[in-house]
Image (cartoon, rainbow, N blue to C red; front, side, top):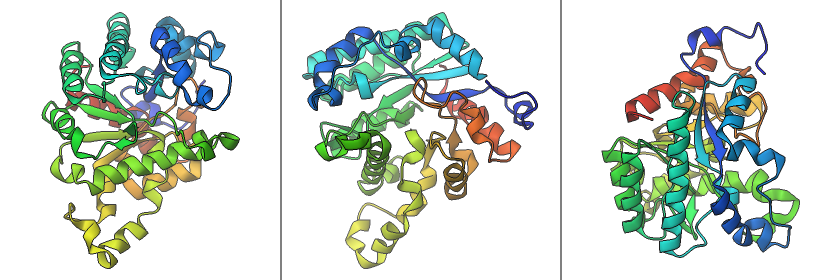
Length: 330
């Protein structure tokens, strides 16, 4: 719950929007469990009846939780860490993507002032993915919910070229959220979640930069989950390679660090000092609120307290309004 008498960001904020809020489709979730990270490493499969999951299954429950947190709108994205479809063959992956996207569209229809819907794509087959994108956009979904990779193929690779062209041409927004690290080393101490996700964000951003996606598509608007992981804070060695390894620059016209502001980032970093550093690296105008509902902080706006009121207002909602309005529709 937001505290009474908090700094005056609220007066400057047109609408408080959490860009990082999850839902799950029960059937898709249950089909994914035998293929999930936890199941693959001998842990008990998750249950959709987990009390923590209730708001991801029931829009009424999620709206109540939003009210308790002082959030006006959620940008809802499938919780693919627990409900990924990447294990399935293309036709089945496409069928499950349709189920997820129909659910997102239904929540938006039922609560148009509360939810902004995203869509997933069956990335195993680009023809099917482009067809599903067209269908999702026709339903009013204008934010693509993408993983960092599909079966080890990161999003900067050439096979995704038509997808990025379509996203740019239609002025859509992309939200990139890794769906879990399967490397056995990361399973100890839950490192897949604590550092693995942040490493995945570094890998996908590096892929998009170095394979020239950001160069070829300057109109792309990509929001990175978890503040872009470690990427914004360690660009020096990448820039150094521009001189010492000029072959790394074959797809680039500027230093790698210059592409940081071509991305947007959510505020889900769990540390006010890191958030302040992220603002210094990329600017408050590139950040949106990231609460990671229902797994993150109960008061995501409270996590912005280290910022100035105008910066808080921009991150809490102003930047998201601009992103979503320029994309058009819900």
